Structure formats: structure tokens, C-alpha cells
Image 1 (cartoon, rainbow, N blue to C red):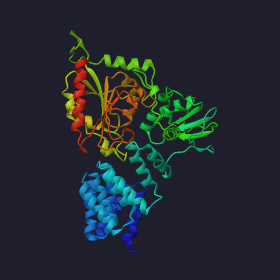
Image 2: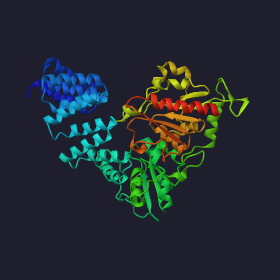
Image 3: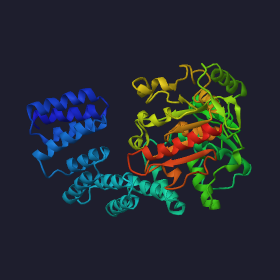
Image 4: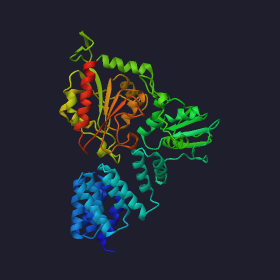
Length: 477
């Protein structure tokens, strides 16, 4: 094997290990000495894609294809990079070429389906996932993707069985136990261990199922990350909260939160929305009155701002309508490019009379505020938020003191809905399955309104709709 190919292999090993700087140096070393090595350009393109450098990735793949036109991997990868840049038609041509060169190429079927699904042409995406199954009938990701589309469309009978294929993925969490997974068996006088499977938003939304199973006679244990225990101790129906590092007591069954939703649907034909958990002004997650009052005093001590006449009493002045905004989710989430919103999109809110904006962006995306001309129009919270009492406890108390939250589809949206705060949720053209394809409200959270993107990547229309709501709310007080 030529020496430069050995260097390329070493680079790929470093790449797979996550050592991207070392991998890039090795790839570049090969390119410098053998600029006509198409594989080296593809490896570099993959690395650039992993770094979300999509424009550079496209250039690298094009250089590889100029050297070797019959290269299905390069065509597929080029299509995927173009997909991330929103070049739908050109990406489609790449996937077509890749599959014409290798008709059973699994990755190209997946990426072609994902291209059209995220472009808003759900039926076309569905078609390519099905085509992939003709060649790879037992591929778990294709089945899972079909399940997601079915659930998004409200086709629960078809969706849940397909969605179960996700459990064949590596990295899905199960507790170490000999107890069976719960699949709808009677729970009278039985103990079940529940746990989240997909992150913070998943945990916050679906912990509600503990109460449903408690009402069915179960003793309910919930296993959660230690930092969420202070927030989740308020969730109804939980007999025992355990953290991931704790020794597990005996139990009869176990299941993820979403599995409970699935198998309750199989048993009843209905989704377990947990509607009985919401009162007029509160949800199923709570923090102490003392913490809520602490943040009320913080708000009350803010420097006074211009106040507006009260619509119901013109001789009185009212405080501004308090609006928390959140624009950025986890950038590592596979759908972040479709659901996070540039802060600058919220400019119209800063011109709305009678409202005061507060940043609920902590961590990811908060740098946008420091770099924006909007920073003087948006109030930020102290650095100690959520540092003492556990994840989201201060944030939950802050939410109870806000009049409205405007947010993209993040864990904060779920928290706002779970504590019962009035929430305006901005959704991309193809939202997560739990929000369905249409509708301005959701049974998951009675206090939440949905504002949907009409054109892929364009937020102006839903933001304008929210702005109209803010103007009306600020005027009415």
C-alpha cells in the first residue's frame, strides 16, 4: 500500500476518534503531496461537514468528483452538504446520480428521503424511505424515519410500530435489569421504572405519564439525571426519584416515557395527553413559592421603564408586558438548522410598545445577544440562574413571573408549557412529530400557541403573527 494511503488511513482513524485537528493535518498532507487523490478530498469534505463548514465541504467533494466522476459516495456526500445549505434541487440531482451509480446505496436513500422531508415535501421523503426498504428491509433507521413521518401526520396506528425500530440504534439507554420492558400489561400492585430516552425536552414533556400509570395502580419509580431531580420532585404520580448513578431497587417492569405513550395508545386508542394535570394557571411541574417570590422581587426591583395607560382604567398606569425570548437550541441536534432562529429575527418585538423583553437564552446562542445591536433592548438575568437549586429550577420560577414566552422548539418551550406559562412556539416548516403538521394549539400544553413557518427557512410570517399577539396583549394588559 502506498505511503500516502497509509497516512490517509491514519487520518481517518484520528477522525473517527474525534481528533479533528490531527485528522485535518493528515488529510492536508496527502492532498499537498497527491492533489489528484479523490479519496483525500472526500475525507476532508466529511471532516468539514462534521464541523458544519458546509460550503467548504461542497468544494472538497466537487474537487473529488472532478478527479473521479464515478464515485457514488462523493455524490451522496455532496448532496448531503448541499441539503444543509438549502440547495434542494441540486442536492436531489446528486442523490439521483449516486443511486444511478450504485442502485442499492443505503445512505443515498436515507439522505434523499431526508432531503425532501425537511424541504416540506413529506410524501416525497416517505417515498424514498420506502424505496430504501425495498433494498434494505431490516434497516432500523429507515423504519424509524417512516415512523416519525406517520406520527407527524397523526397516523398513530402505523407510526408507533415503525417508531419502535429506534431501539435497534446504538446508544439508546436501558437500565441494567432482568425485569421485562412494559408493553401494556396490567400494573395493579406492580412497580415500574420509567426514564427518558431523548434529552431534556423529552424528559420534561413525557414525565406526565408517571401520573397516568399511578392512576392504574402502579408504584412508579422515575430514573433521571441528578440535576433534574429538584425540578421533577414536583411531578405528580412519582413514588421514588432515582438518579442514573444510584443503585436500583427491585421493580416488575421498566419503560421509557415515550414507550408508555406508545403502549397506552395500543391499549386505549388514545394519546395520554395528561390534560387533567393542568389547572387554569399552572401545569404539572412546580417550584417553591419562595423561589417564585424571589424572582418576583427581582423583577420588581428592575429600573422603571416607560409605562402605558391601562386599557381598563385609563387613569392608571400598568407595568410593561413581560416577554421572555429564546431562539437557539442545541447546535448538535440533527434538526437544529431547521428549528433555531437567528436573534435578529426578533427585531420587530423591540419596536412593540408596552412590552419588555427578557433573554431566556442560557448557554448555546447567548453569544448572539452580546454581538447584536439588540442587546440594549433585551434584559438579561444574573449569571447564577440555575446554578444552585438544580437544572431549570430558577428558570421555572422566572417563567412563572413572565406574561409570555416566545421560543423556538427547545427544552425551554417544554418547560414553559409544563409550568403553565403562556407560550408562543415558533415552528419550522417541518416540525417535530409531537406538534403535528397543522393547528395553532396542542393538547400537550394548554397554555401554548403554535406559529408555523410557511416557507422553509423564512421566519418573517410566524414572527409577524406573534408580534400581532404581543401588541394585542400589551394593549389589553
